[in-house]
Length: 116
Length: 172
Image 1 (spheres, rainbow over the protein chains, first blue to last red):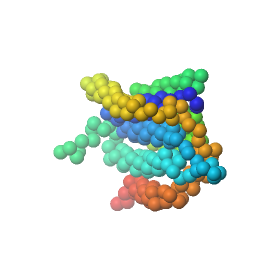
Image 2: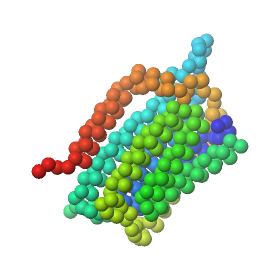
Image 3: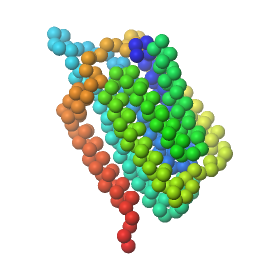
Image 4: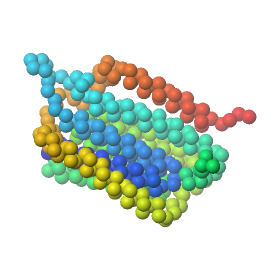
């Protein structure tokens, strides 16, 4: 989009991140807490992509204008974040299933065995 | 006009994000998150990151959210997955902390950004013709970012093995 300033995308990213953080704090259902973590990761992805789009692009003089590895580093970071999020969800939901097998109720406020 | 389209998309995304944390049932939260991810994919397309927009739909709404819905379905056959959220002081304190966190990050980002007289922050500059294409992204992943890419693949493999070990029934 041509007329949107960078601060618009960043404001959306900040709002989504803070909504996710609030959700992690106030919800008791661990599945919803995982969803809120996904929301925060996606807010970071949006910030990465908007910074990557709004950086100045200067092709080398006298050469064919191409996109090099330096220009797509924001997109590369987003690929890494997606991979880490996929691994996190797989392990987290596996832990959740293991907890649910031990007790019939999954509530993060009840899981205080380690607090002594 | 573009600003109006962006405002509609962004406010819909924020409303979907609020739906994730405010709806009572876990399945409604998951569907709100699917809506949020689809709107984010459209926003990635407006940022000319077409490859990542497609990846967002395929990986997040296609794979990760199906995993979430699958686990919700699996757990709700054995018990009540929708917990009764207690109306305690935690919600008010959490909401206030979230608003203050948003104000803090917003001020920390807006003030340095406003002090930079760069024109590219107000309207995006022209980019290369193949900016959002898969080719430069794959080229960068396999040349300049080769070691991080291999580290991420190792992490994914460890995650797969770990989740299988966690989800497997113990044989006694």
